[in-house]
Every structure is written in C-alpha cells, then in structure tokens.
Amino acid sequence: MAFRGATDDSRLERYGFDQLSDGQRALLVLYCLVFLSSNQRASLFLDDPDNCLALREIQPWLAAVGEHCGETLEQVVVVSHHPVTIDYMAGAKGRWFYRDGNGPVRVSDQPDRTVDGVSLSDAIVRGRDRE
Image (cartoon, rainbow, N blue to C red; front, side, top):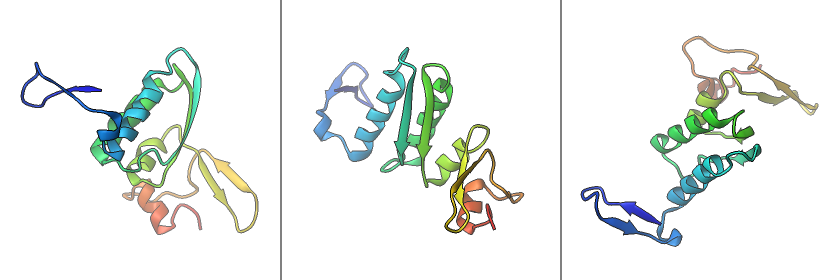
C-alpha cells in the first residue's frame, strides 16, 4: 500500500498491511466492502464494524454505506452498540429488534418510545426505548 505524505505530496510512503494499526486495517477492509462490491448487488452483514475506530473515521464510512445501499449494495445490516452508529443508522431505515421477557424477538421500524431532546443511543442506555 502506498500513501502520500502529509507534508510532501510528491513522495509516496509505502506500508505493508501488517504495518497498519487494527483500526486502519478495519477501515481499509470496510471501504473495500463498499467500493469493490459495485455491480455485484451484494448484501453486507457486519457486526460492530466500528470497533477500533474513532468517530471521525466511522462517520464518513457510514455516509458511504448510506449512499451505496440500494444501488450497488442490495442491503447492509449493521449490528452496533456504538452511539454514533446507532444515531446515524437508526433513523429512516433502521430496524429495532427487541424481546419481551423470554418471548420471541420482534422487529419494528421505530423504537416504541422516544424522549424529546434525548438521542436514540442515550434512550437505549437509559432503558427508555422500551418499558
């Protein structure tokens, strides 16, 4: 892999995949899943893709997934406990999975309850999305 240096645009720095951090490797793979799946009509199922990533790293990737979903990506299922991912992805196209006691898992387009002025992720943490 080659990257342009931060101070000198003409010089390429070369790094092996093993020289990248866990977060850099994860981000590289996540972008490859989105941009190398063109014309494949692929479905992605990702569990906690935001592990090892900072907020400023995951947000552009989430935007790219949103742009490609329904076009080059058939569907994208993201399971996450990260508050930024929840707040970004759970809006218009998110699905809520919940279970009442030991009963079956139910799916809903929206949480049962929202609290004005509280983000969806905060409502989950506080237990206000279901009573």
